[in-house]
Length: 112
Length: 113
Image (cartoon, rainbow over all chains, first blue to last red; front, side, top):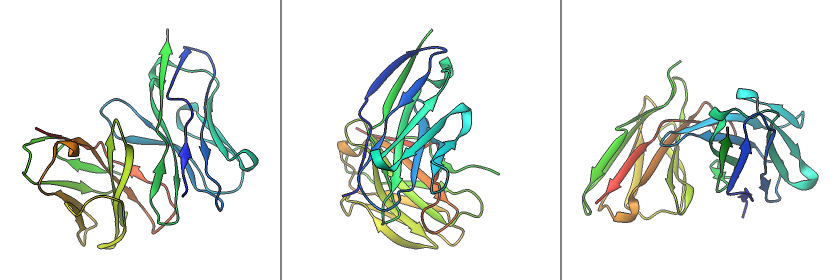
């Protein structure tokens, strides 16, 4: 079955430091991949998506992600984290049934 | 353009009761999906509708049902509520049939007591 794995449950970074959140997807045809962010008690906001083409995709709020087929990864990065980036981040992919499969999420804390 | 609107935002129900949640998708979007989010199970797919037809259903008991109206608005219903149904229920809308980005609403927080 297709799946998405986010190895890190919780990450803490200092404000201004760089960030990388890991995401691995199970083998399959070219995946449609997404990163979402969720603030406490809120819905999911789409940060960026990868469907095809350039493997480095830019998103909102200064985030980017790189699709690496050889590593089955789609890691999210940000060069300089702001305190307002503290939230939970979800990696997701579409499966053949048209539904989104989510990873378990990575909670990001930002130290002042 | 207005986003995805879910009502109500919060609900408290008693075990055994039933509940109906509503979702208004982004204007022009014809696909609506529902997800359940809990701390233990994470985000799980409930069902997806496109042009009033349920195209896909997740692994949930028959107590969970839904429908979509001709204006693409969707409702989901949970009958005979159990304590374990307490969750954040999220609705997402998409502009096309398959493999496009999904835009989520703020969710409905259901608490079953």
